[in-house]
Image (cartoon, rainbow, N blue to C red):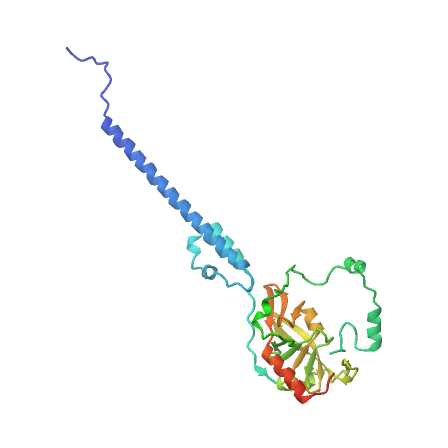
Length: 309
């Protein structure tokens, strides 16, 4: 009996299975590729976030080495175009300037205030200025403030020579000279540079502005100054032109940095912690005191008994 021409054609099941298997394999390969791409993107995002977060580290923390590699363009191939733009934006971050190389090293209290005046009448006028909470709040502060917090921890002094009553003595770069034996004295209303130190700095005395003023010590003794001189003082990336009163008097110190410099730096000195801290655009910076030199200066003062202010 002949087969009917209307019968359905035979189905090649094996061929269909092969097609479906190929499609499944292709979809599997696509899924694996997408997962690998997603993993790469997550890794790239994490690397970028960690590198960029390294920009915000505090001065006490080490900078992430991956950020340095990123800045040197060693990791840019791992980033997308958006990531490269972000890194380029952060790459414009201003680095803290390096301390200049000094040309030489110099090893060797009241009065003269630029604000309160250098005479009794000027100081009396300054004292008459009525200051209260209302008048202070009505006047905006002068200068750029960064809302940085300067703090001290009570156990910081455990690394010092305890117990101690040592003065805060530091070293700074002044007029491109490394000056040691600098007394930070918030009880002094003027910055004092002793003549011997000025001569050791090889600065011509003709640069002194001859304007004799009187410094008054704790016991009321008066000491006449030679004049004043303006010198650049470098500290923690900040270079300030500081006015010094030049005094020809024997001293165990080369220089005294008083309230004019301390306030201009917005610094907070602590003799107990043997450190002075101040805000900068690179964060809170600090200068550690040299405790052994401080004790040596105190010992030399008692031995020599120089004329006191």
